[in-house]
Image 1 (cartoon, rainbow, N blue to C red):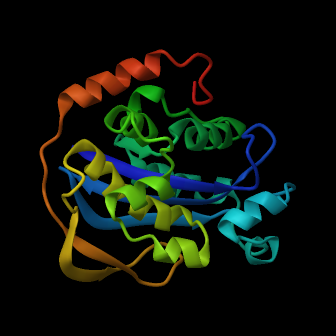
Image 2 (cartoon, helix red, strand yellow):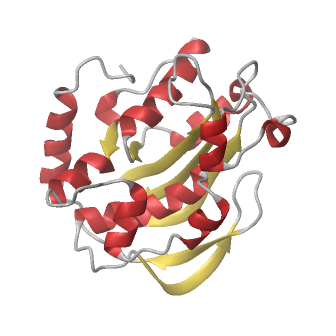
Image 3 (cartoon, rainbow, N blue to C red):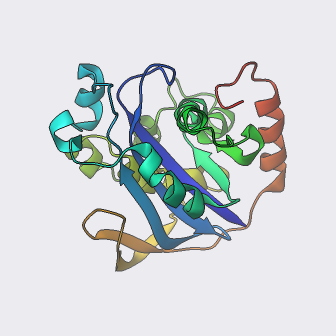
Length: 224
């Protein structure tokens, strides 16, 4: 089974008026990160990065001034994703932006049946917790997020963190997806990143079915 764990950074909150500025993806096959990743920064055209968004991800208009438009990278993105299942935290937000960008280009949108939402999984597994955002889950699971705290959010960095959170959600939160062995891998348009050797886990099909049922309850989803 092939999955793409991904995250986005944007100019603001509404996909109808705001734009993507970064997308980051981690490829997972048979529950193991393969080391293949995709990352692209996108110039938001006539839209400006909002102050609140900048405070989160630290991506400035100055940094983006020579970056390609989404239409220039969409082919590479769709080729990387292929027909894989997409995994995101608060998927409604990320898929809303991805599908709106695809819609602007007249391209086929990605259906909600192909999407898993780790926010839903977190609420299901830890109903007693008051919060289920990525930072809180990292603290709860003992996952290192130092780089995220020091440098701000980043789509690829958050996708890497979410990959570990995802498997801790599906299986036992004390298990670690990555071991001590490290290897360097290249990412698109970035410096080298460090990935740790993964462990293998079986897939829980019951959770997959429950998640699909949950998606059916969402009315007027942004990715529809």
